[in-house]
Image 1 (cartoon, rainbow, N blue to C red):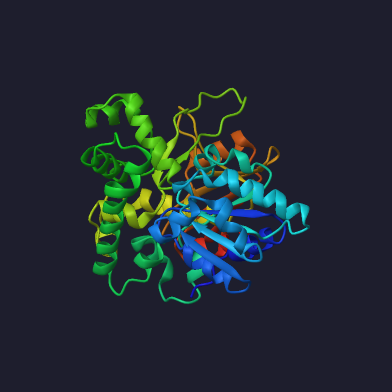
Image 2 (tube, rainbow, N blue to C red):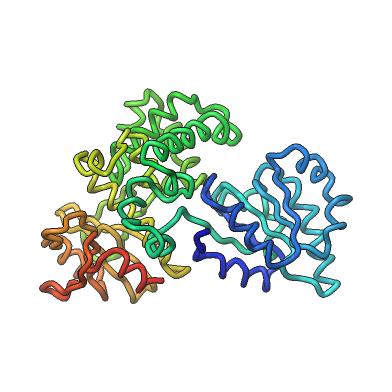
Length: 389
């Protein structure tokens, strides 16, 4: 077992809230974490993909009250949105009896926004937390070469912990196939499997690039509206990150299109058939794959409420990742794969001046921390994540 960093936060919320929703993409470890939490208190577990569990929960008003003294864990909650109304009544009843916390733990393979569309009846009764794939702070102390392996294989537990790179690649191929054949159709049956596979692969090739919906749509022979519908669903399923550009009233011509990243680097490499670290390092996508990996690692440990952006002007000033802690506190981060010369560009310095960055940082895959001219802090990824966490 690897201790998941979010576990303490979820347990604290269960002591405060009637219900907690733990969200994350499929196979990210939600069930394992929920059952681990359930071992410290009496709990009952139901999986809505299991017909034996689903059938009684279709009449929740008659079935759930018998578990009033236990934490009820409901997996794949988005599959039965009719549950929410009955659960609201039970929560209100428990509150009147003075038992208002730790009643339900929901697990869902969809984003907060998507889940909220079907759970408005639980407003004020549920708190949300997102479980990401493994990040370096969770595995680096236990696995030799953890960061390079995590970058190559991605952070899904079964992929990261596979016995070999080949076994990991096979797992990721099956993961993609499962989403294409089963999971995505439950949300939008109009998406042709082959078109969606091509779209996913195109996103891998253009990892970290600016979104050009017209160009992508033309390549897939679909219109822009359909393309955006496909992208919105992948974002909602926590498979793709749409990183928005930072923009303020600073008198500059700024890039307005978002950057698009597949959120797990292992999925990027799987779609591109990069089976080894050598394959990955020699591929043109290596730099942007590393950038996406660092961004996901940073956002996985960043404090709640931190807003992520990138910054780019039409004249070439650029910051890979802007962390905005408040309107007066912004950090500019440049991400480098190079070990030998992780120097920031002149455009990075100009961009940091534009946004009034309080800290200027370069994150790279080395082992030493040092300061470069201009007050640029140069840090190994693991060291920066420890600071941030």
